[in-house]
Image (cartoon, rainbow, N blue to C red; front, side):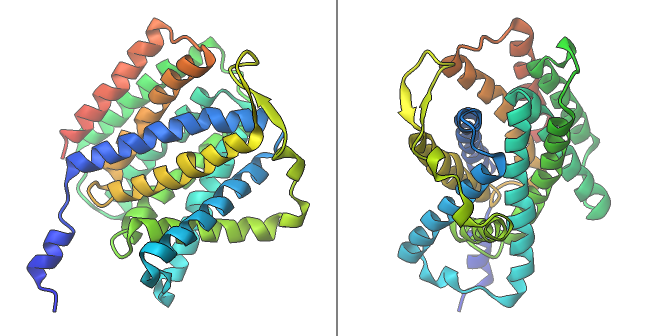
Length: 312
């Protein structure tokens, strides 16, 4: 019989571990943005890329869970609704709308709008869940948005693609739902199997919407030249493997693991470092130079994260 003390130790939160885990996930997601855009520019449809990502990730996770935790295949009836919401609206919708957005707008600009999600999360906990949220959190969120705007350099012309902008805002809503549902579900299920079931729901959704027998398989065997045409040429499936394993399975599992130690509001704020990291990766791989104002914006974002964490 498990004692109350044992249960409390099992779910004891370690915030420092949660922050480090989420920061690693954010780095992997950042690199995946560039990898995914290479594939989109090669001509694969954004919805098909999302389908490929979630389906192959689901297959990998099924194997992992079968080896490490077969009992996790048991799916209580009470979990089905939450997992469908989490998988279809939280995972499939966030990823597909993000792909549509970065196909039509710069990655940094897309992330600026998508990462309004933490504001939605904070408002949800304050007004829907009636949980105490200090005003300092909202000040930090506002400060972070200023920093993200500086990173994206939106003042250079707000002639954004309407569809891309709508997709980015839709991804923000879905991302907020992902944080909120993920925190609830991870309290009752380990992060790996939760990720598996979430991707399974997303894969089922896409299989119904766009059947696999119509998939453009020629895109898998095409070749892509990296670094704006000046780098090496690699098979597209190389990038697809990265997108699935290191850009999807691993970072999603890390995010869920971090939610064992962080509240959704805290985790989503830390996740706002992703546009900054993505800019650094773009500089290293694509030669995109950050201007002094962008560097200052990145510093403001990181400062906002510190301010938010001291508001607990």
